[in-house]
Length: 358
Image (tube, rainbow, N blue to C red; front, side, top):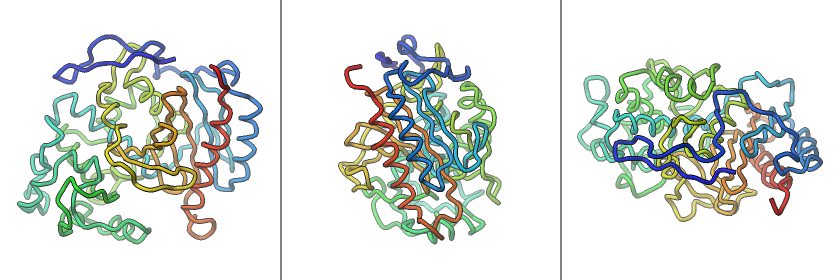
């Protein structure tokens, strides 16, 4: 079990060694029977069968104590099938920002975005200087935005000017005060990061995150303006998604190597809002820095449209990954119903496989 938490010096570098039990995530997963890590094999088989009743489910992967204890693929998917995990990309972006902060490319979360973008390339107004890196991480830019249906996102993604479309919106709140889920703002964060590190985001991610984790097959959605979609559209293998969850469990370490500062992992998964409502089967939701929080179960979640999840429960040393085929979902079950089915599979079926007293 992981029990030590890495500290970070004022320059962002790690202090002390890796947490006890931190596995080398660049190595292939060690596969074990469920009971070797305190999981009920029969309960997981039941969960797998329940998953087969979710028509659009494509993968279910369970990692406990740093070892792969269960996986099943559906609908023609296999272990090497890439999944388009939509807004799970946002949680990856938060991880990359933490690396940029540790590297000194970003000096402070309260730096205004105008330190990184200017009117030589973008339609920047003086009032945009009120928006900081932290505001983009918290979904509190204050810019007018509606993303409660596909139209809001689709209008933005087809606009052809993805930064300009957002920056042209009026301010409707003081930055930092009001949570508004905004994919365009996270894409802007990716542009800010790219300007800060002076390197395309995919190259930066390969060098400092994916490469050190042994993740080699990642596809980013490219946008017409030359940037990748920093808010949605990354394609990865479910096993590799589980590595990201395990990295967070290990406070940013992979074996003896610090990939992300431990204090950043803590900051990212710290509750920033008292209560953001509920989504069945989670009664109390909150948000950190581009990660959702299940307040009932002390879990944090990378969450993508139509049922894409990296669900991490630190107290149980558990990572669960689930992916679906979300394309065309609005024509049948609907994205909300699908994500509720998949979440219930995780919380009501997989979590019940944990043996008590371990």
